[in-house]
Length: 280
Ligand SMILES: NC(=O)c1ccc[n+]([C@@H]2O[C@H](COP(=O)([O-])OP(=O)(O)OC[C@H]3O[C@@H](n4cnc5c(N)ncnc54)[C@H](OP(=O)(O)O)[C@@H]3O)[C@@H](O)[C@H]2O)c1
Image 1: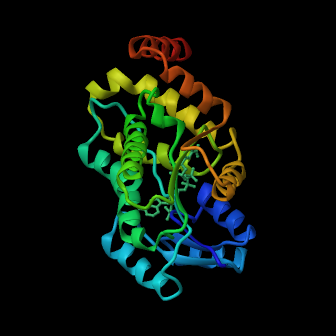
Image 2 (image 1 turned 180 degrees about the vertical axis):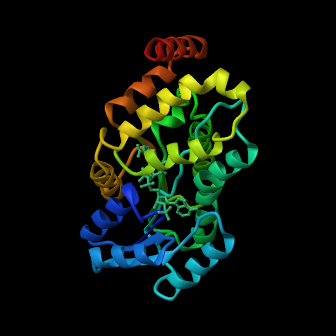
């Protein structure tokens, strides 16, 4: 029987690689994009990919994608919530509108999509795979909006798992460490834009840390795991009979998990001291 999968945010990075991997695995993949050029590129990659316009922050867009997909099937084997952005900055000065945007994409976006397509999830066995992050462990200063969004994503979907009546539904959280994708540069660009006209007070307090972290984040586009590593893990999680609830991938992700077992006070001390030492 043909198996259909919907993946959000498939224009680049993990989403694009995962869409391609799943298409090669033989799934029919609905790949969410926001631009015509990305639709064309994705569909040229593999015959099993159908790109659909899907902005997860827009109810209208989610409804249109639903109409499009329902012309082809009303049965999904899996939804992969991958679309995401990363917002950073010091909590003391982060505009609330920017925080809302972070949650609208990473958290409410995933919920919006899953609520709309929930009735399509195969009652005989289906999966929701969330591309969370090691950030869900919340031990990273100056990227608290991103960390909070990933923790919230994991929490909402864990509740969904416990609450819902579809006994055959599996919900899996994948928590990668650093992966070299465009997200890092996009995130620093957005952060620089948010803080370009900051007050002297903000500059005096946080400039050194922000410059250091921005430099580090930009380097991440060149290091870390490859998007394909995550794509292969998603593929494995979709084919395994009994997948785990949560997967860490990358040494940094395993380390973040270990750190999170420490008492918060100890963890905060280690992170703060480490940051001070590196910034000088
Ligand atoms: N890279 C890492 O180190 C890393 C580590 C852990 C977890 N992750 C997670 O992996 C996921 C994919 O990120 P990536 O690293 O592959 O970055 P990426 O290349 O920047 O991909 C992000 C994707 O999300 C899409 N997107 C953004 N806003 C959207 C919206 N409102 N509606 C629909 N799609 C939207 C983007 O589409 P457009 O091109 O249209 O903007 C793009 O396709 C994210 O959830 C991220 O948090 C990444």
